[in-house]
Image (cartoon, rainbow, N blue to C red; front, side):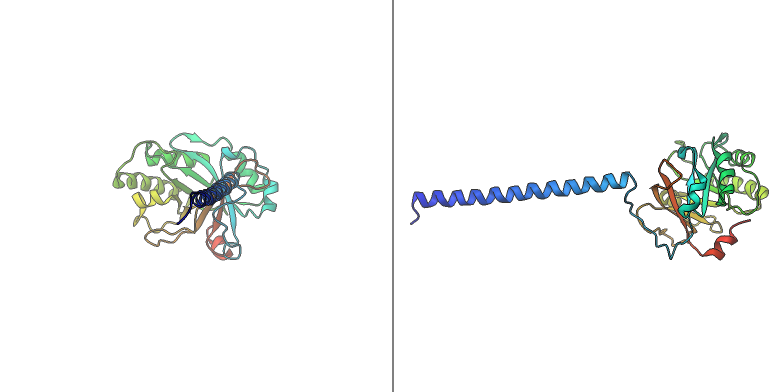
Length: 258
Protein backbone atom coordinates (compact mmCIF):
# COMPACT_ATOMS: atom_id res chain seq x y z
CA UNK A 1 0.00 0.00 0.00
CA UNK A 2 1.35 3.46 -1.02
CA UNK A 3 2.08 5.81 1.88
CA UNK A 4 1.06 9.48 1.93
CA UNK A 5 4.68 10.39 1.33
CA UNK A 6 4.85 8.12 -1.69
CA UNK A 7 1.54 9.48 -3.04
CA UNK A 8 2.78 13.04 -2.63
CA UNK A 9 6.01 12.20 -4.41
CA UNK A 10 4.10 10.61 -7.29
CA UNK A 11 1.88 13.67 -7.68
CA UNK A 12 4.89 15.98 -7.69
CA UNK A 13 6.56 13.88 -10.38
CA UNK A 14 3.36 13.92 -12.46
CA UNK A 15 3.00 17.68 -12.09
CA UNK A 16 6.62 18.19 -13.12
CA UNK A 17 6.08 16.05 -16.22
CA UNK A 18 2.93 18.03 -17.14
CA UNK A 19 4.80 21.33 -16.71
CA UNK A 20 7.61 20.13 -18.94
CA UNK A 21 5.14 19.02 -21.62
CA UNK A 22 3.27 22.34 -21.43
CA UNK A 23 6.51 24.29 -21.74
CA UNK A 24 7.48 22.26 -24.78
CA UNK A 25 4.09 22.88 -26.34
CA UNK A 26 4.39 26.62 -25.70
CA UNK A 27 7.91 26.69 -27.16
CA UNK A 28 6.72 24.71 -30.20
CA UNK A 29 3.79 27.10 -30.74
CA UNK A 30 6.07 30.12 -30.45
CA UNK A 31 8.45 28.63 -33.02
CA UNK A 32 5.59 27.82 -35.41
CA UNK A 33 4.06 31.30 -35.08
CA UNK A 34 7.48 32.89 -35.52
CA UNK A 35 8.20 30.87 -38.66
CA UNK A 36 4.75 31.67 -40.07
CA UNK A 37 5.28 35.35 -39.36
CA UNK A 38 8.69 35.31 -41.07
CA UNK A 39 7.17 33.46 -44.05
CA UNK A 40 4.35 36.00 -44.40
CA UNK A 41 6.78 38.92 -44.08
CA UNK A 42 9.07 37.41 -46.72
CA UNK A 43 6.09 36.95 -49.03
CA UNK A 44 4.90 40.51 -48.45
CA UNK A 45 8.29 42.03 -49.25
CA UNK A 46 8.82 39.81 -52.30
CA UNK A 47 11.74 37.91 -50.78
CA UNK A 48 9.84 34.66 -51.25
CA UNK A 49 7.01 33.74 -53.59
CA UNK A 50 4.91 30.67 -54.32
CA UNK A 51 5.96 30.27 -57.96
CA UNK A 52 9.44 29.81 -59.42
CA UNK A 53 8.89 28.90 -63.10
CA UNK A 54 11.70 26.80 -64.50
CA UNK A 55 14.00 28.96 -66.63
CA UNK A 56 14.65 26.20 -69.13
CA UNK A 57 10.95 25.65 -69.67
CA UNK A 58 10.06 29.36 -69.56
CA UNK A 59 13.08 31.29 -70.87
CA UNK A 60 11.08 34.26 -72.21
CA UNK A 61 10.19 36.51 -69.27
CA UNK A 62 8.57 39.86 -68.80
CA UNK A 63 6.59 42.29 -66.67
CA UNK A 64 3.40 44.31 -66.75
CA UNK A 65 3.40 47.90 -65.54
CA UNK A 66 1.27 51.01 -65.11
CA UNK A 67 1.58 54.37 -63.38
CA UNK A 68 1.58 52.44 -60.10
CA UNK A 69 5.21 51.48 -60.80
CA UNK A 70 6.03 55.20 -60.90
CA UNK A 71 9.30 56.17 -62.61
CA UNK A 72 10.98 53.16 -64.26
CA UNK A 73 14.62 52.95 -65.28
CA UNK A 74 14.11 50.92 -68.43
CA UNK A 75 17.84 50.79 -69.11
CA UNK A 76 18.41 48.77 -65.94
CA UNK A 77 15.63 46.37 -66.85
CA UNK A 78 17.62 45.24 -69.89
CA UNK A 79 19.99 43.54 -67.44
CA UNK A 80 17.15 41.89 -65.50
CA UNK A 81 16.24 39.36 -68.19
CA UNK A 82 13.10 41.35 -69.08
CA UNK A 83 12.24 40.41 -72.67
CA UNK A 84 8.76 41.90 -72.85
CA UNK A 85 6.51 44.38 -71.06
CA UNK A 86 2.77 44.80 -71.11
CA UNK A 87 2.08 48.49 -70.44
CA UNK A 88 -1.25 49.84 -69.24
CA UNK A 89 -2.72 52.30 -71.71
CA UNK A 90 -6.36 52.84 -70.86
CA UNK A 91 -9.33 51.92 -68.68
CA UNK A 92 -13.02 52.24 -69.38
CA UNK A 93 -14.25 54.95 -71.70
CA UNK A 94 -11.96 57.86 -70.84
CA UNK A 95 -9.11 56.99 -68.44
CA UNK A 96 -5.63 57.15 -69.96
CA UNK A 97 -2.66 56.00 -67.90
CA UNK A 98 -0.51 59.03 -67.12
CA UNK A 99 2.76 57.21 -67.78
CA UNK A 100 1.78 55.16 -70.83
CA UNK A 101 3.41 57.36 -73.46
CA UNK A 102 6.63 57.62 -71.46
CA UNK A 103 6.78 53.89 -70.71
CA UNK A 104 5.91 52.99 -74.30
CA UNK A 105 8.78 54.99 -75.77
CA UNK A 106 11.32 54.12 -73.06
CA UNK A 107 10.64 50.39 -73.41
CA UNK A 108 11.25 50.64 -77.14
CA UNK A 109 14.48 52.54 -76.53
CA UNK A 110 15.59 49.75 -74.17
CA UNK A 111 14.80 47.17 -76.88
CA UNK A 112 12.14 45.50 -74.75
CA UNK A 113 9.23 44.02 -76.69
CA UNK A 114 6.08 46.00 -75.92
CA UNK A 115 2.37 45.36 -75.66
CA UNK A 116 -0.42 47.64 -74.47
CA UNK A 117 -3.37 46.66 -72.31
CA UNK A 118 -6.82 48.06 -71.61
CA UNK A 119 -8.76 47.47 -68.39
CA UNK A 120 -12.25 46.57 -69.59
CA UNK A 121 -15.08 47.80 -67.37
CA UNK A 122 -18.67 46.62 -67.13
CA UNK A 123 -19.99 50.19 -67.00
CA UNK A 124 -19.04 51.49 -70.45
CA UNK A 125 -20.00 50.28 -73.95
CA UNK A 126 -17.40 48.21 -75.74
CA UNK A 127 -17.12 50.58 -78.70
CA UNK A 128 -16.54 53.56 -76.44
CA UNK A 129 -13.78 51.70 -74.60
CA UNK A 130 -12.18 50.63 -77.89
CA UNK A 131 -12.10 54.24 -79.05
CA UNK A 132 -10.30 55.24 -75.87
CA UNK A 133 -7.62 52.60 -76.54
CA UNK A 134 -7.31 53.52 -80.23
CA UNK A 135 -6.83 57.20 -79.38
CA UNK A 136 -4.02 56.30 -76.98
CA UNK A 137 -2.02 53.40 -78.43
CA UNK A 138 -0.14 53.96 -81.69
CA UNK A 139 -0.30 51.37 -84.43
CA UNK A 140 3.29 50.12 -84.65
CA UNK A 141 4.95 46.96 -86.01
CA UNK A 142 6.68 44.32 -83.89
CA UNK A 143 4.42 44.70 -80.85
CA UNK A 144 2.54 42.12 -78.84
CA UNK A 145 -1.21 41.73 -79.36
CA UNK A 146 -3.41 44.34 -77.66
CA UNK A 147 -4.53 42.95 -74.30
CA UNK A 148 -8.00 43.17 -72.77
CA UNK A 149 -7.72 43.02 -68.99
CA UNK A 150 -10.78 41.13 -67.71
CA UNK A 151 -11.17 40.81 -63.96
CA UNK A 152 -13.58 41.64 -61.15
CA UNK A 153 -11.05 43.37 -58.92
CA UNK A 154 -11.17 47.13 -59.45
CA UNK A 155 -14.17 46.86 -61.77
CA UNK A 156 -17.50 48.64 -61.28
CA UNK A 157 -20.27 46.94 -59.32
CA UNK A 158 -22.42 46.04 -62.33
CA UNK A 159 -22.55 42.34 -63.17
CA UNK A 160 -24.10 41.93 -66.62
CA UNK A 161 -25.38 38.65 -67.97
CA UNK A 162 -22.95 36.56 -69.97
CA UNK A 163 -24.83 37.41 -73.16
CA UNK A 164 -24.77 41.15 -72.49
CA UNK A 165 -21.09 41.11 -71.56
CA UNK A 166 -20.07 39.12 -74.62
CA UNK A 167 -21.92 41.58 -76.84
CA UNK A 168 -19.93 44.53 -75.48
CA UNK A 169 -16.68 42.57 -75.53
CA UNK A 170 -17.24 41.53 -79.15
CA UNK A 171 -17.95 45.15 -80.10
CA UNK A 172 -14.62 46.11 -78.50
CA UNK A 173 -12.75 43.31 -80.28
CA UNK A 174 -14.21 44.23 -83.68
CA UNK A 175 -12.96 47.81 -83.37
CA UNK A 176 -9.51 46.76 -82.19
CA UNK A 177 -9.05 44.23 -84.98
CA UNK A 178 -10.24 46.74 -87.58
CA UNK A 179 -7.56 49.26 -86.57
CA UNK A 180 -4.59 47.13 -85.46
CA UNK A 181 -5.11 44.06 -87.66
CA UNK A 182 -4.17 41.92 -84.67
CA UNK A 183 -6.35 39.57 -82.66
CA UNK A 184 -6.37 40.82 -79.05
CA UNK A 185 -5.44 38.66 -76.08
CA UNK A 186 -7.38 38.22 -72.82
CA UNK A 187 -5.80 38.75 -69.41
CA UNK A 188 -7.91 36.67 -67.04
CA UNK A 189 -8.43 35.49 -63.50
CA UNK A 190 -9.98 32.08 -62.94
CA UNK A 191 -13.16 33.61 -61.50
CA UNK A 192 -13.75 35.81 -64.51
CA UNK A 193 -12.99 33.05 -66.97
CA UNK A 194 -15.36 30.60 -65.32
CA UNK A 195 -18.24 33.08 -65.19
CA UNK A 196 -17.95 34.75 -68.59
CA UNK A 197 -15.50 33.16 -71.01
CA UNK A 198 -15.35 29.41 -70.49
CA UNK A 199 -16.35 27.91 -73.84
CA UNK A 200 -16.44 31.35 -75.50
CA UNK A 201 -14.17 33.09 -78.03
CA UNK A 202 -11.77 30.17 -78.01
CA UNK A 203 -9.71 31.47 -80.95
CA UNK A 204 -8.21 34.17 -78.73
CA UNK A 205 -5.06 33.75 -76.66
CA UNK A 206 -5.07 33.84 -72.88
CA UNK A 207 -2.76 35.47 -70.37
CA UNK A 208 -3.70 33.86 -67.05
CA UNK A 209 -3.06 35.01 -63.50
CA UNK A 210 -2.05 32.46 -60.88
CA UNK A 211 0.36 33.67 -58.20
CA UNK A 212 0.06 30.46 -56.15
CA UNK A 213 0.66 27.55 -58.52
CA UNK A 214 1.09 26.39 -62.10
CA UNK A 215 -2.06 27.53 -63.95
CA UNK A 216 -4.74 25.14 -65.14
CA UNK A 217 -8.13 26.15 -66.49
CA UNK A 218 -11.09 23.89 -65.72
CA UNK A 219 -11.71 23.06 -69.36
CA UNK A 220 -7.97 22.53 -70.03
CA UNK A 221 -7.88 25.48 -72.43
CA UNK A 222 -4.35 26.49 -73.34
CA UNK A 223 -2.75 29.76 -72.28
CA UNK A 224 0.17 31.71 -73.73
CA UNK A 225 1.28 33.96 -70.86
CA UNK A 226 1.35 33.37 -67.11
CA UNK A 227 1.43 36.09 -64.47
CA UNK A 228 3.09 34.15 -61.68
CA UNK A 229 3.85 36.86 -59.12
CA UNK A 230 2.47 40.24 -58.13
CA UNK A 231 5.31 41.21 -55.79
CA UNK A 232 8.40 40.95 -57.94
CA UNK A 233 11.46 43.07 -57.26
CA UNK A 234 13.69 44.16 -60.13
CA UNK A 235 16.48 46.68 -60.52
CA UNK A 236 15.06 49.73 -62.25
CA UNK A 237 11.68 49.59 -60.48
CA UNK A 238 11.34 50.87 -56.93
CA UNK A 239 7.90 49.35 -56.31
CA UNK A 240 6.66 45.79 -56.59
CA UNK A 241 6.00 44.63 -60.14
CA UNK A 242 4.06 41.77 -61.72
CA UNK A 243 6.22 39.00 -63.18
CA UNK A 244 5.26 36.96 -66.24
CA UNK A 245 6.50 34.22 -68.53
CA UNK A 246 5.66 33.22 -72.10
CA UNK A 247 4.51 29.64 -72.63
CA UNK A 248 6.48 28.83 -75.74
CA UNK A 249 9.78 29.12 -77.55
CA UNK A 250 11.42 31.94 -79.49
CA UNK A 251 9.75 30.98 -82.77
CA UNK A 252 6.25 31.09 -81.27
CA UNK A 253 7.02 34.34 -79.45
CA UNK A 254 8.15 36.07 -82.64
CA UNK A 255 4.98 34.94 -84.43
CA UNK A 256 2.97 37.05 -81.99
CA UNK A 257 4.70 40.23 -83.09
CA UNK A 258 3.54 42.38 -85.97
